[in-house]
Length: 262
Image (cartoon, rainbow, N blue to C red; front, side, top):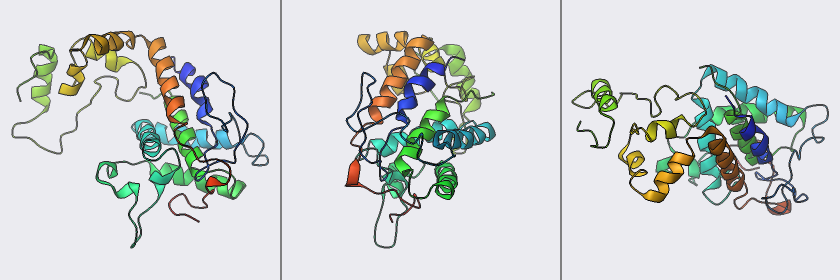
């Protein structure tokens, strides 16, 4: 499947965010960006060890073991960036005297921390104090989506065949342990299938179906059904998100352990 586009464009998520955060570097000239961020910043900063290859090898290995890990790493990056910027703070464990983002109600279901820990341990062994935790999160999210994975009353707008299949899968009374694919037949593949299903009235949630009730959002859903359009827009969004309020220069620290401050 053609996720090479995302891999190439989203590779600028190999940014320097220190504290995770990198020492302020020259602006990467890629059309959209943030002063101080640079592609492939760690290229020659870890001796003979390739930082980006180390991250990719661990991520691809873990995604091969568990296809759901790709989505977990994407979510980890999203939650890190959208709370006070991309600073790796989502990784911090709570202490007896402090609470952290990780313990907030909406974040308790986030997982994938062990992958970041594994990557950090490998990089600390090779070049201590060089690679920031926030950068590891950004790189892991990038590599996760570049990996090709092996792979009641229904809303009246719901496809009737799909609605019937949901009735069979969802018992009555409700069983909280029931697991259901949100993107049937493509839940472990990074592609535009969600929009293809949505435009055929096979969105799982009411919020999905609502996208088709507005002319503008319905048009966007139709455009994003095209794989090239979806990958291009996804990459642009990831790049934009990866530059949200990053810490530069001496604003932060490179943690030895991503779960605690130095």
